[in-house]
Length: 123
Image (cartoon, rainbow, N blue to C red):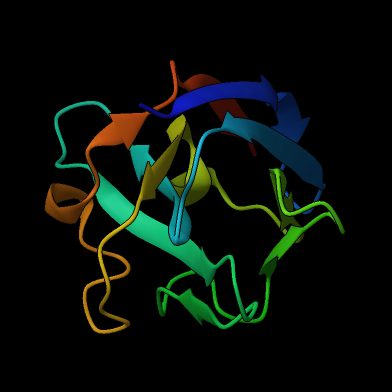
């Protein structure tokens, strides 16, 4: 069983930055950040392979967001820069032990989820 505790989030003006953190207990192979805007499906934003730090990003955030982990490989961060109104939503941290780089941004492949944190970007 994996438990995930998120922190960070909040409100920021367009162009600003925020950093999210996710502390994990238990074994994971991939950790990811996902977001859900009102009325929309949950989408993958960024993922990291905990063992080798391989990363993957959605096209909508590539070049603006950075996923990273601490040296202990127990906490994952999402640094969000140049935020836009479209980035508004509830952000979730998720974890899984299954293999597969190709599916790293697919929320259906993640069994463990954090409680979610709201990110609001105003223009």
